[in-house]
Length: 242
Image (tube, rainbow, N blue to C red):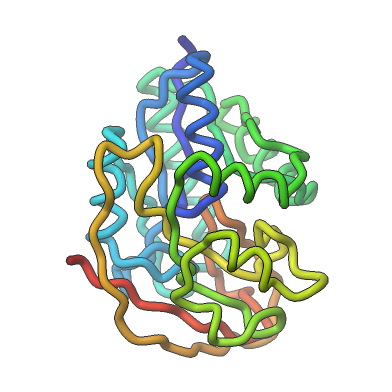
């Protein structure tokens, strides 16, 4: 099999893409690579505590590799950290980098250019899939997730902390992508076919944060909030290890 790393955010798109890759048996996934905000000790943009990210990796059974980033890294800093990490993994014999992106063409182009510099080959197993169909597949295959971040431009605070189920899908307002591909929301997957056992947690408080005008560079696979972040506010549902 082809040796690969998987860009893991802990969310639903990552889980669906990883499940497809593991079932396909074309790639041997050597590690899960996740951007971590070193200042807050949480997954970048998703706001999930590192303890829960580590619990996910243990339950999946694939080693976790963290990209440690400062509180608000510039793109220069982000690209440097990513480049150094990927070069090291390439030296270890990893030739492929797998993503859960669905249809953001600019992001895909950025990733492919980034991988070409290593060099590695970027792989997109769920590219251009219908997002409602993907979410329905996620639910029907037994995955379970909780919403950990919502963008106030698209969703109100009541969506934070909800389970990602058929009821959630039915309640999404018109114009909101079912998989949140435009940054409408982010999720934390705690159970499903890729897990040996559920990841235990309990709901904490909901925290609101506002970000100043900037350019987005994030998705649900390995997102990073840089000093050129967002012109909007987010509701973060804190999850506590149980």
